[in-house]
Length: 485
Image (cartoon, rainbow, N blue to C red; front, side):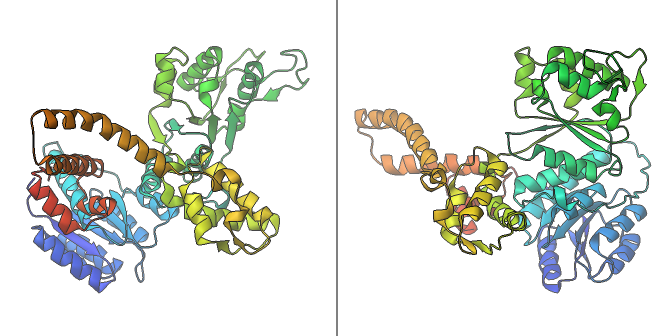
């Protein structure tokens, strides 16, 4: 896909990175503009009006996030891609709140940069066909990430979730968080609230699966004096009232009864509630964040969840991946839990032995992050040294045969069912060169599937395959695989 030359401003204090970008962007047919600090970059924004800005966060003088605010004031439509080697949850969320187009970690993957530039350019082509609109200037306060609700993880999956949090935080639209038990749905809800304009108002959680129907109704909506047997003589405000001006987190909302679903639908529609036993409605200003460990779309199909309520919940959604799909975060999570558990239990544990960490990374974690936290706590209790060893882990983790073996056996079974027919045909037809034909077919299918999964990122594909990028490119050529770009 060919695009016209773009003026691309690179703001980075590392001369080697600037040189590398200058060569890369020139080779790609673009015009690089280089600035070694934020102040120089902001001046060049005014002079050059670049199409795209690649902005480092750690800069001498004005930092990258402050520069991003200045850029958005000077040029609201600027496409800014934030880069940093010191990526953190807070930085990612704040960059997205300030309307960065994307956020990429260092060391920079040039294939990823190319893909983003192509995506930006395609978007600009489409935007040029539309009538111009005036965009407001951006003024956003940058809240700090509360330590008690700190998110941990640098995997690509979690980076995407941090971006979503940044984009979702500063509005009042209902959010649905889906994920298995123990993945940290309430932590994500806390983070959305803590980074929003409602952060100084209450965050009120309700576990809809832990309370019987009648009790859940009174908890949500409150009750007047004498509304039912045992009701307080003074009445009681519900969670909606307690969360007024803030955020109400409805956990395991799929367990809510049909009757309560109807009442909740009316609250979302009218923005008012009525206490049990009450006679007049009460206005409430509450943002709803709902969470579930079930597939709500499937629950709708089966008639267990109201379709209209599902669509109200599903305006914005976050799908939290299970821990087994982001094993790269396990070492970070282990170190985080070691710090918190050591303080909690009063034991000074310095770290984890390599073999112990290997066992933790191989385990499948059906209970997800919560199970990992409990495993670390248990190991700290059992340890008599300042380093966790395999002997401190549960027998379930020690004896786990591994996700890799089960995955390998599934792969072999799938291949066997296909190859049996292939071999039978080859023998019947006295076909030769079967080995080369099968190997080429497997290579071609594997590489095509992998390229599709990583959006044609050749560097990532080569890494997953365990070969060099040069070897991958040669295979793509020899096997006649067509690329999208």
